[in-house]
Structures are given as C-alpha cells and as structure tokens.
Length: 199
Image 1 (cartoon, rainbow, N blue to C red):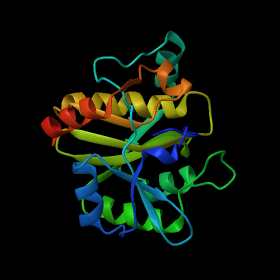
Image 2: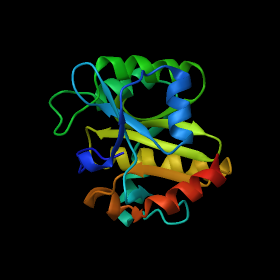
Image 3: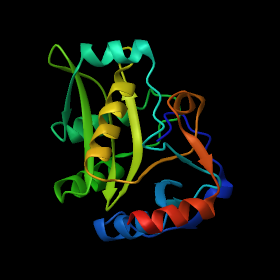
C-alpha cells in the first residue's frame, strides 16, 4: 500500500493476464498483486520481503489520536472517488490507471474490495482501499489531502479487521511512512504461510 513505494522489478513473478474479478481474487489468494507493466500488460508482484502491519502492532501517536477526533470516517461510501484520488497523476509514484479503477470498482460492487473515507466538512480529505479475502486484507493504496487523514483511515481499517477476525494486513512493501505506523518486513515464505492460514 505504499504511496511512493520502492517498486523492484525483481519482485515481478509474471506478466500478462487480465484484471477480471476471478483473476484478481485467485492472485491475492496466491500472494500476488497487479500493477501496470507497460501500456498493454499487467505485472504480478510477490515482494521478498513483504510488508505487513501486525494487527496488534499499529502505532498511534498522541497527535494521531487527536486527529482521529477531528474527522468523520465512512466505509464503502465513496469507493471510486477514493480510487480516483489515489490515481491522481500529480502524485509521486502514481501507477493506478483507468483499467485498474474499473477493475477494482467491479470487485467493490461484488463485495470484495473496500474503502475507508475520511471526511472533513463534507469533503473527502483522505482514505484507502484494498481487497478482503477471508482473513486477509490486501491494502492497495492510500491518500491524504489534510494532516493525518490517511493515517486515520488506517486506524479505522485496523479496528474493522480486528472486529471481523481478520489476521493479516498486507501493505506490499514497507516505506518509512508505514514503518512509523508499525509496518514490518517479513520473508516471502513467511508471508505465504500466514496467507495460507488467513484465506
């Protein structure tokens, strides 16, 4: 779920296929996730090491706890709007194209993809989205327009995952930003073992 993640071509394990719901769900169950490879093809990644946030390891600073009280948070109310914000081409490291927005919007309408929206004065100021398969939540991307808005979305996501007995929050790669929130890197084989239990 990195906003400007350290994408490494050595983490690519396949190129090709489509973004149909069945393809995407099979990929997540196998520990893969897609990103655009070129104008026509999709690459499938399985990073080693893999970034996760332990559900009992989320770090919330005092300032973040204050921020939580400043915002309203919704779930699944503005999924496509969240994806569009994550796909904003002016963002550094942006990779989400129209095909991905359409594909994940289909997954959302089928009940597999979810978003958390952070609202201030009726405006969308931050959020995240990802895919839930059994006890796995695969975080895909997050954004913020105001201080701590994406972090507030993450806190609400983790609360929901705990409440619904999820066991694995995948964030793809670790970044300095995610590490401040408790993200850790684990070997691919360990991730795949945790994934097998989660799904």
